[in-house]
Amino acid sequence: MKFTNKFTFITSAIVLTCIGLVLVGGLFSLRALTLKHHQQRVDSIIQVIEKQLDKQTTVTQFDHWLPDLLDASGIVRLEVKRDDVTVYQNYFESREYYPMRLLLRYSYTLDNYPGCI
Image (tube, rainbow, N blue to C red; front, side, top):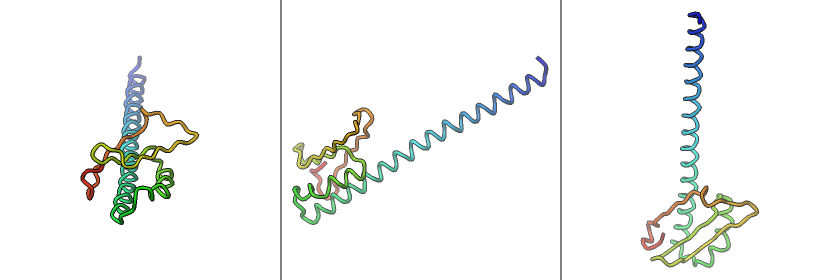
């Protein structure tokens, strides 16, 4: 091989490696951004639930508006527990199948209601 061929090969390999590293870094950044977006969505739902509990809303009143809010937010399952007893449970079933291994799970303790999760 001539020097120019070796130089061209090495330069091309370095450029392709840099492009690959930039793409991998972009994928990791996109995943982190997506997870942060999901976290903010869930945080806003938790804040709405806490505000409604502060208004002394009964659990049965949640059935009127909470399923639509969960559906719009893309939340598949919501379960509110107090001391290991389920107070409220909602499972959104649609025509789509949600594999359990792909679902993100969040667990929160409500600030104003320490026994609730």
